[in-house]
Image (cartoon, rainbow, N blue to C red; front, side, top):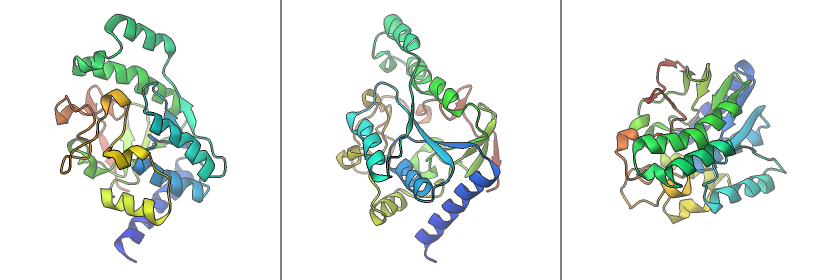
Length: 239
């Protein structure tokens, strides 16, 4: 078995274990490359793991187009969408302005809290575990990432089945398996979030350099994987 085959086999084994030991479980997809790998593995194997995405109201058109591409490619499968509370968005914009997230890390995190963190809480409610497409190689904030972790913020287990995968591994899988992917990846966007907070990167830059590019690298998390401003790495579990 070559290295790529082992990675795939290990990831499938993790997904099978999630279904067997941690149901009900859901997968939070950003509709970017890593998440399309997991989408492919989950749907092709017909695993009982629901897939949802956070529709923040500020996503690129190319990202929203992935919803229809997934539906077409995977026999009508529809990714569930969770949106922010309109009154919370309206209050933030009225008080601070539409793009106040550029003003400070605090303002940016509050925008992320309203548009992503609160909807995530609703999406995870009632589940025993959730799955992400995070990888260790993505950024300085994720180097200690484990395949299985305790998530104290949501009182459940969190799985990162692609933790060991490299950027090249992700793209090898996508090309080898004809997996649909976000058109922004062909425009220099290795990491994709909300449109105002994401830019294309230059060759040689960190893969997440285009996310909140005006901030220091050690603050570049939206809050989905944090508790009290710190990354959720309280207790790792041997996979």
